[in-house]
Length: 626
Image (cartoon, rainbow, N blue to C red; front, top):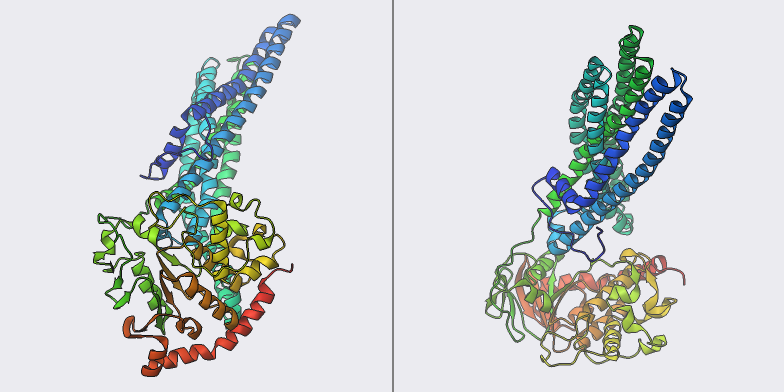
């Protein structure tokens, strides 16, 4: 039984932490059963050694029978060899149990994150997801290794108790009652560990999120002089996490100390009682040796039981966090009406914005969040009364909206990989493309049917899928429209150059153009973009503005921007005040008729030179030496 990269991990039990752990066991119950059997036999054979030693002393050494002594000694050697082999099998089996639980939980978490999609960020922080993926998954998988040895410890405990009954009823009662006493002593500590471990995990996720935010915005914070404030906050949070870690470590150290010390006291007590019985003639010397051996062998089951309690206490805390994540649900999609068959007007009643199909529309506002809220409503990322044609967006199935309306997020994730993977073109589609000039060149024609999908949504049903040459042409057009040719030419291997996660080895302006090229490559019917050129210098921004208008000719494009270079090329401009349309017209018309609009745009125009200088410095600092 195995789990591979493409196997369905199954439907997890989300009713609680213990139930989730039980589900992981059920998903690989043959392997867990094998581990339990191997561990049980292994531990019972540990107890067989003192039994055989007692027989060697009583029937061979004490009467001087060398033959019997050789037989019993040989039996001990044989049992030891078999037990060593069983120990290897047990360890391998439990390693497979741990890895299966690890990969299965990862697949369940990643699959659920994918299903949540855009709703993920609104319901859980990045730090929480990272903590689950890095820490909790490992803790859960490690806790399952206690399943086999834990069952084996119980079996061995019962077996040793039975062997002790054949020697002395009093000693057997001490042994059988001793372990429950250990459990009563350690139980409260296990409960405290769960509480402190849960608090530690919560603080860890918060700190992880702060690390991500700090790393992502370090350059901006440094420019604004806020790096010291954030560093101080991080120092305080990390100090609190350290103190909480000390508290977790304190409880853990007591559990481990008692787990080692109490069995030793238990061993000393049984040995003392056995020695007294031997001195009084109630048991033989060989039986005294066997009693000592039984108690030593019992140390393994007792240690495993304590370790099992410790690991399961930590594992159930981690499982509860995973279950809490798996209980998150995206907003229900109750749409039953088909989207308009033809390009239609998008209308947001809350702001009064009307988006005419086939036009380049700009949204201008003093507060960028107002414009992005409108874009989110028009793409149905937030609930609203927005309509598409005469149909409410809420009544349209979400997949139809996603296939035709795209938001180009300025902070969209860029995963590590080669540049063509980052843009969204499979490497196989670029094989044999030849030199860079075969992919990058002049591309003045509008995009049509570009992207990872075969054709645009309104292509004929009998249309032929695009050839490799078509896909290369679409890629060329997207890169050209985003004015990203110079990025590819500067890289040593062009589109095949590896790029770090979030494209950290590129500058902010380069990342912005790569994101824009990726959005243009999909060629959606409606493209919504927030500040797509904010990190570009004035010259590059003007180039992008011209090429974007050309590339999206005849398609619906909405830009949330205040740059005069973009606004001058827009067909329609909506000036928003307090989130509502205050004036509509062309850029020139609003400049002449709206003083507030003129003041807003003029302020942005005055900052263009500063933007150019900042971009130049950013290119020099962010781009790698080639």
